[in-house]
Structures are given as structure tokens and as C-alpha cells.
Amino acid sequence: MSQSFDVIVLGVGGMGSAACFELARRGRRVLGLEQFPLVHARGSSHGHTRIIRTAYAEHPSYVPLARRAFEKWYELEQLTGRHLLTECPCLNAGPPGSDHVEGVRASVRTHNLAAEELTGDEINRRYPAFHFPGDFMGVIEQAAGFLFVEECVRAQIDSAVSFGAEIHAEEAVRAWKVVGDGVEVTTDRGTYRAAKLVIAAGAWATKLLATIGVPLRVMRQVLLWFAAGGRPELFRRDRFPLFIADVPGVPFYGLPAIDPFGAKVARHYGAPELPDPDGVSWDVSTSDVEVLRENLAAMLPGLGAFTKGQVCMYTVTPDRHFVIDQHPEFPQVSAACGFSGHGFKFAPTVGEILADLAERGITAHDISLFSARRTR
Image (cartoon, rainbow, N blue to C red; front, side, top):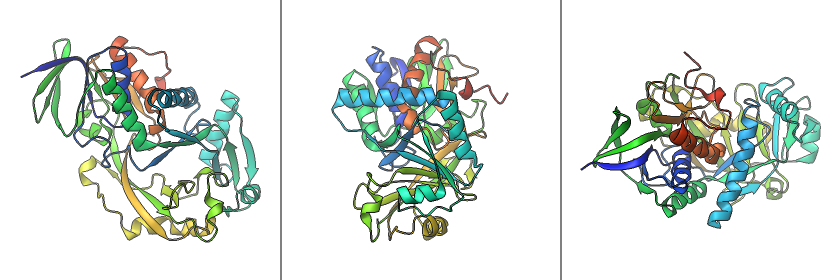
């Protein structure tokens, strides 16, 4: 039997749960469909923590969206009574002229952001856990922190349900199609109709949004935790910042030790690009750890033994910018995909944009950088 809604949302991870919440509290009849159990570890919205930052290296256009995301995360904390965001400085470091550091500096200049520039030696004196080369430079900003990612998704889902959204877990979508002015979605349990469709399916957008216009590929990424070593106090949040190190060949990032597993570090990009998520291995191997060993030994020598690892996925676009737009062929369908490993922090802002697109087809946020038509 077919059931009808105002909006159907495919995918209830970080972006999809935000869209469900925003649409439901605007009074829309919402159905969210998730193929896995809710708040699962088989996508891109898990791994305990995610960095949130403001001086955005990827492009100055992200800065207003990041500022809005801070507001929305704090609002969600207030609505739910849950601790979701912990403030912590973010250090951006690299050799002179590195793309990441220069991108941060561009955002700082464009938006007049508060930030401090340091040499490699100054970084090492201020944060003794680091042993960066003396000719490195860094930019540190205070308007940053980390999000407890699973708790964020859970809070968005629970809030959506509290406003009347219907969320179905472990119900895989088989197909969607436009029917007249609306849409029809077929799952392994039934068929649903709605006036509008939002697709926020993470790596599965490679299949559900094959005609969106921007090529999408999947990259396996591994999150690693290492014990804080002989001087664990150096890796505490009051003495160790979030960091993004633009190291040639193996750029990596990390977070302070906030539990017994130690500091979290991960390589950023560099893995093979796959056509879809079907080929991703979910087991952490010795080679996954070894790829970072040289950099960690040189630049974070105080880290101790490997304690745990977890696999996640980036869904990447060629230019590494997001896709947030109406479908080029079907205006009743909106999409958010291709977050390229730096999207989660924006989830509540993206949810707001997706709700705007589903309701009115436009949004007050500047999303021109994320057009599905940019490669045409």
C-alpha cells in the first residue's frame, strides 16, 4: 500500500537527519528512510568526533555556512540538553606556501577572522607535543572545536521524531522516480509517495544520484587512535589543539586525547577512488596504521601504541566541493552529496538549506559553489 508524505528523505545520517529535523519542525509530514540501523558505522557520520572550524581553507564561501553551523549546533544542544560541541583551538600547519595554510589565510583576510600566525618553532614551543620543522608555518584560530558525531546524529533524529517525523531504519531504497508533480520511492518493504524528495545518501549517492551532473566517487578513509604516551598531559585538550597538517604526500589531521584510547589521527585523502561503496573494506589493517607512522614519529613523537581504528568513507567530487542543489532535471528533488571528507560540521546548516529547497526551491544561503550544474 502506498503512503503519502510532504517530503521523503533518503538517508538518515548527518545530513539526512538534519533535513528531517528541520522539515518536521516546520510542520511538514516527513518520512526518513535509512538502510542501516540508526546511528550506524557503515557510512560517513561516525568515529566519535569531527572537527568544526571557521577559517575555512577550502574556500572563503564556506565561512558564513560554518558560522551558521555553530549557531545551529548550540541551538540543538539547548533543545535537547545534550553536549554536542566542545570548543578547542584549531592549528593549521604546513610548509611555506602550502595550499591549506594559504587557504586559511585567504578566509581570514576575506572575513576579517581572528587568527594568529606562528612559525614551526613557535608552534613547538607553545604545544610541546609537536615537532614540526622550523620552516613550517601555522595559523591558529579559537573559533573551532569538535563535535561528538554519533550523539549529534542521534539528537537530530530524536528531535525530528519529537516534531512528528516518521523514521524507518533498516529499510533499503530500491528505486525512486518522478510521478507527475511528485515522487515515488520503492523500498524492500513498500512504496511511498511525496510531493518532494531529498536525497542525502552519503556514498550511496553514487547510485541514487547517478544523473546529478557532478561525478561522485568513494574513498575509503581510516581513523586511528594512539595512546598519549609517556607524557599524556601534552595531549590533553588544554595543551593540545585540533590540527590539520598539510604535509606533502600524506596530509593528516588530529584531535586531542579525550578518553583512554588517546589522540585521534587520520590521513586526509590519498586513498584510491572507488566507483561506489561496494568495494570498501571495513577492516583496519596493519598497512592502514603504517601509512602514518613516519609522519607521526617525526612530528608527534610522544604518541604511544596504536589502540583502535575505524573505517569511514568520503564521497568525493572532482573539485572537492559539495553538491547541494535541486536536481537538474527534476525540481521536486533536492540533493546533498559529495561532502569530500569535510562536510559533517555543516550538517544543521545543510538541513536548513535542504528544507528551504524542498519548500520553496531557493535558499537565503549562498550555495552557488555547490551547484549541480557547475561541471556542465
